[in-house]
Amino acid sequence: MSALNRVPSLMARAGTASALTLAAVSGSVVVPGVASEAAAASHASKALKIAASKKGSPYRWGATGPHRFDCSGLTLYSFKKAGKKLPRTAAQQYNKTSRVSAKSRRTGDLVFFHSGSSVYHVGIYAGKNRIWHAPKTGAVVRLERIWSSSVWYGRVK
Image 1 (cartoon, rainbow, N blue to C red):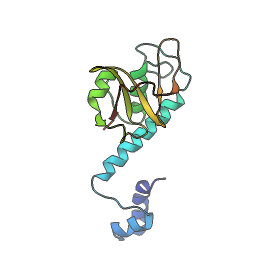
Image 2 (image 1 turned 45 degrees about the vertical axis):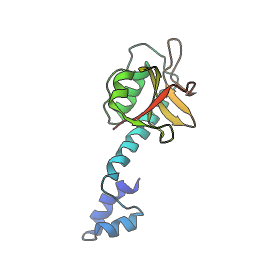
Image 3 (image 1 turned 135 degrees about the horizontal axis):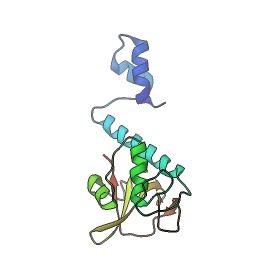
Image 4 (image 1 turned 180 degrees about the horizontal axis):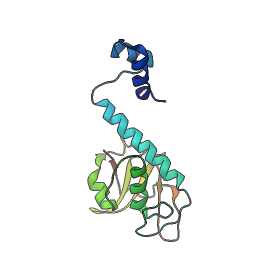
């Protein structure tokens, strides 16, 4: 259980204790604006686990799960199950995310492959320069190294 999830139960047990005391007891400090970042990280982490759980599912163009996926179908499905709505295509998903630099990327961020200004593929960043994705016809959902330098990163809001 995360520190943020423990605060309500600690507050119920503590009665009139102050929020700062509760933060000290729980080992965390709640800062305005940070909760939304923590929630976004939580959604991204869940989406990453969901995508990984689909390992071996066959690629099918236009498929959005739960047993077959195309690239954006996998990201759409994973984030939907994690509580976040994404549009259908990789390009639409790119336009819906916040831009992230390669140095600032985190697990759960989306990785968009592009040719010029056109996005043609998407996966979920798994760390160590790898993504979970549904690559192409005849392939299955898998963990793979990022093979191109023509990528952009986006964070689901």
